[in-house]
Image 1: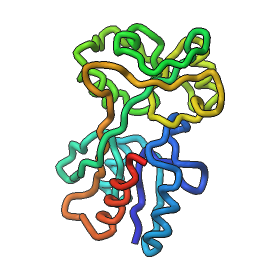
Image 2 (image 1 turned 180 degrees about the horizontal axis):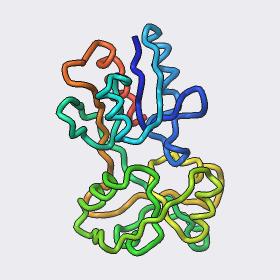
Image 3 (image 1 turned 90 degrees about the vertical axis):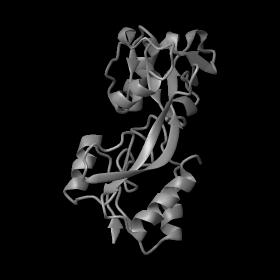
Length: 213
């Protein structure tokens, strides 16, 4: 008995629970606390793109998935898990840390999105201040060095709080997006229709308790 796939989380065997090192979706002790509380359930966790995760659910390869989008396939169902606020990583002039940036300050810049672009755009678009036609998105390679170089060249990176780049004493600052609405991504627990089990409920409730930790 196992829940096989939770996309956007990295395997416990290889590194901490980071989103490609750009921000934590759940606290690092999430696995350990789950294992100690529920030793009868083995958790295999993979990191896959949303479409791949949904396909794995449809094919029965995975039992459950975390997504920033609701599944569109009628074969799949989802439960609301909560929201995570989007943060902005930057190297401000003079290396003075800033608490917040406005939506307009994101416009026209070299902006990189390490997570699904569509949900990020939808979240930002909830702010009337947003003018999406002016956004210019850039790719940035995974890895702290590539990200740091991108930021030092004036780029901005959207992610979640807890980025190792902003917490290792470097010149990188992490700030909120200030607007008329909170800029956050909605998180869903996805599974096959009519396939909800006690195992699903156990994992779902554990995620729910630890989402904001």
